[in-house]
Amino acid sequence: MRLKIDLNALMLLAIPLTIYLIFVIFPILWNIVISFTNMTVGGSYTFTGLENYIRLLSSTRFLNALKNTLMWFIIYLVFPIGLGLLMAILVNSINRGANFFKLVYFYPLSLSFAVIGIIWSFIYEPTYGVLNEILRKIGLGFLAYPWLIDPNIALIAVGIAASWRELGFDFVVFFAGLRAIPQEYLDAAKVDGASAFVKYRYIILPLLKPAFITAFAITMIRALKVFDIIYVMTRGGPGFTTEVLGYYAFVLAFEAFDYGGGAALSVILTLISLLFIALYLKIALKEEVRY
Image 1 (cartoon, one colour):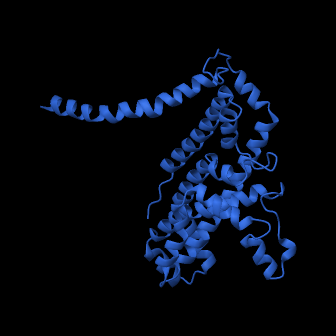
Image 2: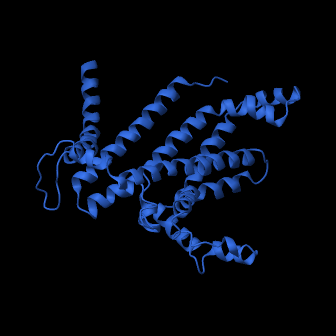
């Protein structure tokens, strides 16, 4: 009877496992194979070993895309994670209207990056864009910029637009973490006369550590996946100042038809993502908050 139950379970697992192998594992393995070839248009190829990886790692354009991706990490640390924590604290401290603010802050996450890119392209438009128009109306016209054209600020401008969407995720993570803190801890601190600084320094922020780990790991992996908002807003320009690794992989594979190079860059991105996932699992499994 037990053998029959196990066989039934295996039969049920076999179907999703087969689908997973065909549509997830096989494409990944095939991508790895292509990364060791010189495949271009037409599909014919010969194996070239590590040539694509060596070419990429010694390319100034790859290093520029890597630098921009690292810059994207910093932007995400400041805006979605930093502001998400601040907004969660503020919303958690009010008794009325919290649901309204939760809806407002979470709403951008329901929009795709393509839609976000179009909206913010209009906001940044140099002549009639909302941002420059507001700056002119309040007497700060000297701050009006061609935001997506100036190579010095274009990456930050696109990063802020992307952060507007990602903010909702980090806000929800921190808000859930704040609500999970037992009220008796906060009441005891209040009875002891602890200041707001002491309460946050020694009670709230330490207990938010799991939320920090989750927000950091997920947001960093999302930073590595950035592509569509770059494609919609700047296409990597001006020059290559907003080109990140994900977009460069697309350019190599589907504009330059360098399938081997694009596949090699995808493998590098996958390895970096796996590193973040491994770090997240190691820390998350090690750190367990007991209330």
